[in-house]
Length: 285
Ligand code: GLU
Image (cartoon, rainbow, N blue to C red; front, side):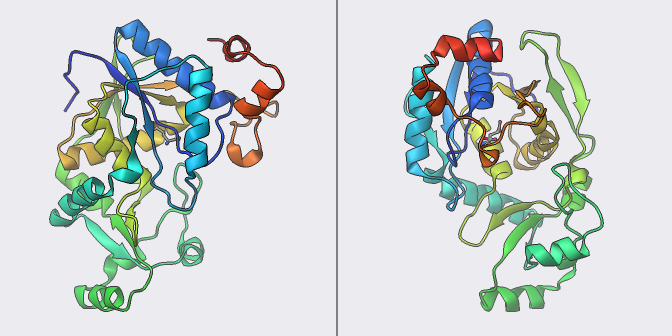
């Protein structure tokens, strides 16, 4: 279902598990530029559903960095950690459609049994727990074994027929193209786990719809994940925004910038005397 709202709404949706680096600055500036070009609004959404990695101090730092870059957004900011009941309801919707199943496999068991990788290079789930019968599922759930709930992607795909999404680029105002989605390359993804009734994919589609997002501007590395998002939108009866995949800012070795590799963050550039103009110049915006 394509999004039909007349007022363009875009979003920048960082996960507060580290400081923003120059790649995030590019993505944020790109989104605000695109919103201005379309005569629309850019929103900030904090994607803090991972209880282990999200830290409130990073939320504060992200807001400070974005303000320093000169970016502003309507308040209040959507913070996903306040919306677990909404994601749980979306999970229940999928459960009612018999599309979620419990999985008790450890990471190492999956790695040992898997023969393929997903688009992120992680071992593709080999479907081990899909074959547990109801009695075994109940028994293991009662025992309190660590559990994750996976989407039965094959069953899901058989319900929705051909899946496509709309892409524009390089400027958001370009002529749209229709792209074919292939969520099967992700296998049976985890959508919920014990204690956390959501995953990035689930809360992303729920909130893009809740915020009325008409255009999603995200890095090229996120293009494969969009296949899954389109599938979830169909299953949950949610609108599908228009997508634009922007270039990635790479490090000197040609690799994607990553907090985990210690890529230089905006706060340290600022401390070295960089101005917002220097950042814009560095990323070409
Ligand atoms: N929280 C995700 C990230 O920081 C958002 C990506 C997206 O949906 O555009 O990578």
